[in-house]
Image 1 (spheres, rainbow, N blue to C red):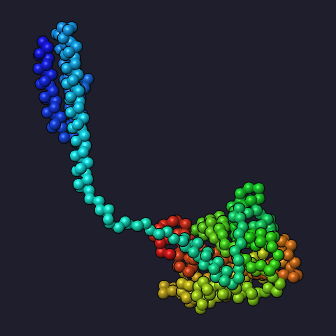
Image 2: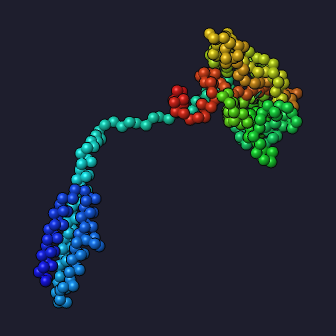
Length: 348
Ligand code: DAH
């Protein structure tokens, strides 16, 4: 009886080893393992034949079955390793990697067009003697409105659709509050510019809820409109070219008196007001583009900061950074600045 079992074992082992050799991938090997070593496998089934063995014969027969199982198991493991190695070798030989090739390199980052424009504006004005001042973007009503001669019911508040926060706080609607903060801190003479972000509830292709301004303020004894005119004309000709026409138009701001809006000759139609197809769309046929607001500081503002308006006078101006950049580079949609589209940004 024991001999019969040994013969069966030998036959199964031979069969198993042959199948292991033929199995060419991991899935086939697994099938072989299940077939011979699994719970319902052939080597497990053979234990059922033990019923015919005497009690003396059983331990030895059991050992043989286990030894056979072990050999089949080891053969599968060896074959698995060599199949895996073959797969790896095939993959490597199909994949040539030349480590001496130059790399693709990573594109160099650069300054955002608005940051570059702000720097350019500040450099031009810096060369005229202005130094940079800073103020908070979260402002209080007093600095953003009240001290700039815009009392609570003043209609000028409507022009600046304000993001209110709470407890009298708001997102500053212009950089003009920096004028107040500076004058609260220092005595004249002073010449400052204040670049920064401002916020208004406004959103179309020429308005963004967040945009940038540069504020200017010069205060001393004897400052008059001629100083204002010289500084702004010089600034605009540095920015748009030495021959750029500049004109000053009477206007109104609560914090300046007299006030002016300053125009440059239209950069699109060259001041003619007409294009080949009709009226110039950018200047709407006028030949002029409004570029900034300015004026002589209103004595009421000086009163708020404790300056003697009999002794001191000054001028102020405010310019939109996006507006200057759009005109200078012929950009028709302000939202392009904030969309972070590489194709746009890479042009600068
Ligand atoms: N703060 C004004 C605005 O945002 C711009 C402005 C106009 C600023 C006249 C000034 C100024 O300093 O004098 O619309």
